[in-house]
Image (cartoon, rainbow, N blue to C red; front, side, top):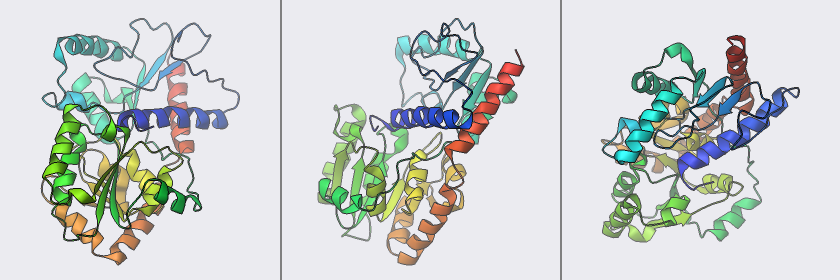
Length: 334
């Protein structure tokens, strides 16, 4: 599930939403499919993923259609996400198609504002429905096994996710290298960290090679979802260093198992984390926030308690209920 944070998040979203909808209303028949969307006798079609540079929406839609747009970050920062000629053509087609759907669902108010501004759609056509953390429970018996399996250090800062520019992993590495604590390690989890050498990974490896703390930086790679809760629990803190986010599912995953969260204040992250995290400006005071959290056991305990409480406000039952209301609204409008 960590091919990238986006794919990991979308895969989790689709699976968890389908399961929650099935429990919510047993009379509804849900048909997961990747083709023949409009020939299965459905009343409505929901596309759980939108990519501006790939043709993820059909041009012809004979049935009411809902699409989930998790974020439009590649369109907000075109210099960091070059689209090329083919990408530009596909984006124009995708923009035309998405403006014709009956309703758009998105994860946060931050993403809703981006959708309204970039796509030029009415605010009434976009509904914010927050996500929830994955349903994998923390099995305490797994904690020592997971620590051994991944050779995790005694004390570490954790990051889980992708390596795209907006994730600011290089910024995290550079700030980690200047930490007051010289016994704390940095653990980076995600398949992209051990995947093909793309420019983003090259920049990360360059930052590590230049770091005086490179011996304390660990690229773990893929961790299956049933092991992740234990990895979060073992961390001293979870850090989300992003320059922008459409939601921030990893904050909730960390909070759910009591891992203290130190997070950027950009995009949707404060919207998701609420009072359950310590925030920083990723371009100004990440180092100060990390030092503050690592140096105070009392602060970490406070963040753990606040985060656990905050995570309980996000459930897949709520997500499914709000999504079902969108379906009903769309069907009433036909």
